[in-house]
Structures are given as C-alpha cells and as structure tokens.
Image (cartoon, rainbow over all chains, first blue to last red; front, side, top):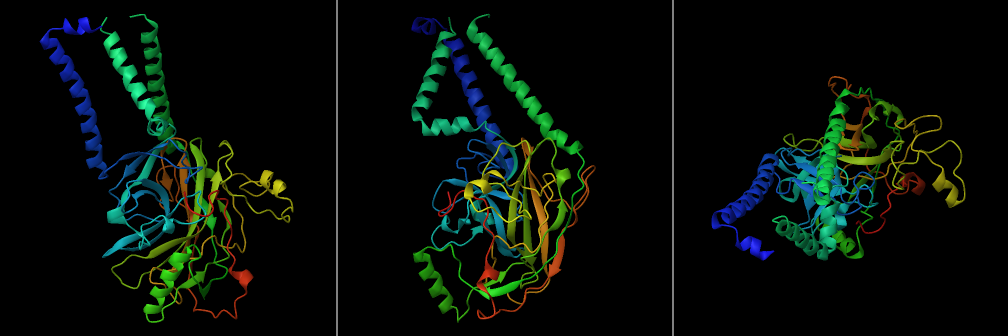
Length: 174
Length: 262
C-alpha cells in the first residue's frame, strides 16, 4: 500500500493534497455563504428532540431564515438558551414588543404540555428576538439529518467512518 | 471500472439524485394545488381574573410573589379567554398531497399601550390535525363528538378522529370551546384592554419542502382565508366570588410531554 504512495511524484502528491483542500474549502465557503445569505449563524439544523412531534421528528433537517425580524406567533424558531449551546426548536406562542421596543417571544414545543419558561435562563421570562433566536424555520427535509445524531451519540461511528474512508482512498490507488 | 464497490457507489449516487429530484418536484408542485379556506370565529365569553402562572416551580413561585409585591401592589391578571370560538372552519382544501399535518391555532391580539409598538399576540388554543395518510401519533387533536365520552380510558384512545363524524380532515365544529391557555400581558395587566382581535391561523407542515402559514391575500390558486376573525374588548377584573371554578378550567391538549418540557 504505502509503496504506491511513495512512488507518486511530488507534483502529483501536491495536486492530490490541493484537490482535497479545495473540496474542503468549497464546502466551508458554501456553508458560510449560506450563513451570510440567511443571516443565521447556523442556517441548517438537525432536530435533536421529540418536543415538536409529530411535525418534526428526531433527525429531520431544518432550513432557517433569520432576516424576518418581526417574528409572528405560530412561527417555529430555533434559539439558544442563554449560557448554553444547545439549540432548541419550538413554536412561538406569545409575542410582546416590536417596533421601538425589543421583540419578546415565548415559545412552546408542540409535544410539550408546558411552555418554555422553565427552559429559559434564570430570571429570563421571554426570548429576545434579536439576541437569542438563531433563525426561523422556513423549510424542512425529513430524516436525512439522522446521520449526525448517530455520529454524536455513538462516537465510535465517527472513527469507524473516517477509517473506512481513509481505507477506500488508499485502496483505490491500486 | 466494474467492481462491486464502483457499482454500489453508482447505484447509491443515482438513488440520491433521483430522491432529491422527486423531493424538489413534490415541494414545488404544492403551488399548483388550489386552496379555498374559510372559517367563522365568534367570541362567546371572556373573563379576566387574578391568578398566578401555574407552571412556576416552588422556587420561582417565591420569586414571582416578591416581584409583584414590590411593584406597588400590581398583581397578575389573567383573562379567561373566550371559551367560545370556532364554528365551522373549512380547511379541507389545505390538505394536498404534500400535507403531513396542519397546526391550527387561535390567537388573541390586542394593541399595546404605546403607539410605536405593534400589537401583542398570544395563542389561546391550538390543535394538530394530521393528514389521513400520516402515521398515527398520540399528539394529535381529537375532535369532541356529540356523544358523551366513554368511561374507560382504552376506548377513548382508539376512537377519536381529528374531525367530526362524517367529515374529513380540516373541518372543525366547536361551540363554547374552552381555551387551552390562559393568557396575560407582559406587564401583568390585561383587563379593560380594547380593540382586541380573535383570529384563526394555521401552519401547514409538508412532507418535504417549505412550511406555509395563514394567507389572507390570494396568490394564484391559493385563495386567502375568508372570515376567521372577531373583535372584542377585554372586560374589567372580576372578583373571585363571582367566578365559578368550573368556568376557569382550560382544555387539556394531547401533548405527550407533561411536567418538565423536553
């Protein structure tokens, strides 16, 4: 195996490495470009919990749009609890403010009996649209995000997949 | 060139391309379906009583209490939302081949105290109406029937459609309906607010593609919602002696997660 890599000329090796770097950077640019276009720090999210069933199941992919600052009641927003990094996908059930005052929202999951007051940070009764909300859901594709959930819940899958990919790259040389 | 690995790769690549194309076609084809939603919504009764957010834990309760005491005696006032409401909305035309479910909700919106701030809005009732093709999920709306509810729990679980007998998904007929949520204003005062509006909204959840919300204007084949709004004023605060406890009961939804939200 390794002899075939050593027999590559430096120019070919460099071309391979550059190709690989090009693919990675294109993917990164697409992601960041989408972030800028939607004005959201994370324009595509995967649903992690079942609190919005049966609308969204675990593993669904959601497309976010963050340029509609006048979020209406009934819209589904993705927000981060202050101080934590876990995005939560819930529906807006109340709104106060807007215009000259900051827009405040209360959210609730469709499958939760209670609204999200307990989920917010201490002393926080409402979400602020400008600060806490990552984006509002505009489109959805079922099920395709389940791979990311599997990867995060079974970390050995990550190493297994990387090992498999490395193996196929090396084997294809012959 | 003809190894099994290459063949598997080709098949898989073709499968994903076709799946993506079909999904895109389904998502876009929704624009061709015609919709003629209509509804009539009427307020039956609205009461404003003093109360406390029931979902606070014991620690939060103490907190809230202190806050309200310090605010010069201002107490939280809940409107008892319109137990009335819905009469014959017809949202059946919203169910097309790409509809997984419709989230119907009724909101009460009232102007804010300052003219530069838009009206505040709060949901008082909601229901998840699944399409007939959607797999069963316990968190779906069960339409009340004219018969008295059966005594045993197992019976009520198996029967119960999200629409009245003989109708199809999208038809809801409710009279004197209790709300699911009692609402309040962020300031704590909602009594005697004028120019409030009760309105019906929906959110169509597709199998794949874009989510759509209520449209009152018409776009091509999609007609706007006809009816579905009612104007009212919030009455003054009522003392606890004049209100019966049964009148303040709220409707329990079909949500699975009770207690702490997931």
